[in-house]
Length: 524
Image 1 (cartoon, helix red, strand yellow):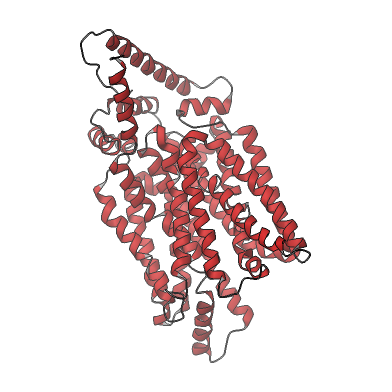
Image 2 (cartoon, helix red, strand yellow; image 1 turned 120 degrees about the horizontal axis):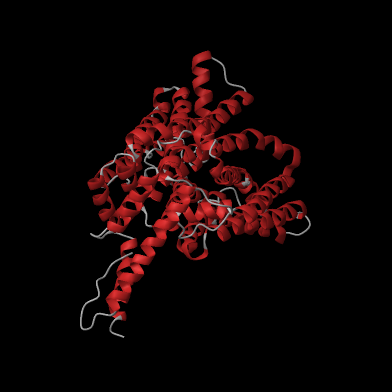
């Protein structure tokens, strides 16, 4: 019985060391200046839309002595909103060379230049009287979002222990939701949702960027980047010690060095090289499917219909902005809940279950909107369906695609993989903005059935193809994908894992035979 005490203490210490203070600070500071800003810029344009359109018209009238037509105002506003996705695509394209030469952390820091420049352009556009400053600012802000949505998940996946890799990866989704909610709150009429104050909504972008610039330089770079790409074992050891909260990181160093030995002749892969790697075709296809469904699953349609459904339920226009806050609150609660259970439930059930629930509630919402004039209670059920669809999205599809991209690929392929994911993400975003108005005009409330079909197709693909990646090594994930004879590199990684496990068992057996001695606490 006495011999069990040190082992229990070891497990307890191990559990505590998973979430070190530095790991928490790095993830929060990284996300606050990255994914938070992405979410904030998704929602911040909604409240001041009327005022910005008026500003566009006034600018045009001052220049050309005539007012803009309604179609022209709509066109310029559509460009202002959609150009964010074009900037995001540019950001996704420059991520791979940036993280290769500057590293993950420094890329996040340099990315703040885009955010600060964009904030200044948009905040001072009204004062300067140039509507082009708003449009250019939105484009530059999109570049910031494109870089951050690839660099941040990459950084988090490389600094986190395997045991909490999924939970830490959900930080990206959680802070996107927090950003959306913050944009909704600050856009209320009592705060900055007034004609005289709307430029402050965009000036607030500077605050998260400054916080990241102040905090992140004091934290280490990704230890895997330092060891595998910069070949600096001392810096990597210090980084592991900082993020894991323990002094003995010999196992972690040895594990990464083994991967380095297997990749000694492998340079950072380009997109073309990754696409030509036949052993990764299913991983690439899965990333493409999850990222496409992430944007095409219909959440943008939900945001578009929210106000109309609330009006149909009898809510006054003055109350709608406050009721809309409930959607942001539900997003945050669902994303946090997903982060808490992802290491217990796994990625696969949450992702497939999230898409499946979205299908169910899309169908119910379609029925409610079609028959809402026949029974008033159907209008209130529509509100419930909206909240349920948002929660279902945030439980799985809202964050897990970013986690999976970091888990599927080895160090040399990860930048190219995130570039592919980013390109698909932003192209799908742009397609939704371009095509959705026509779908909505042609199908009206039945457009939700189109999104239900997308979610169904995604869930079916993931059910048959996606393996569970919870607590699995890269070798085990590769083997689960191929289900065939695994390549030499994967086989060697498996042998390495088996040797370490055997070594740990031998050490434990030796320790248990000592009488009146202390068992050496070793985290294997």
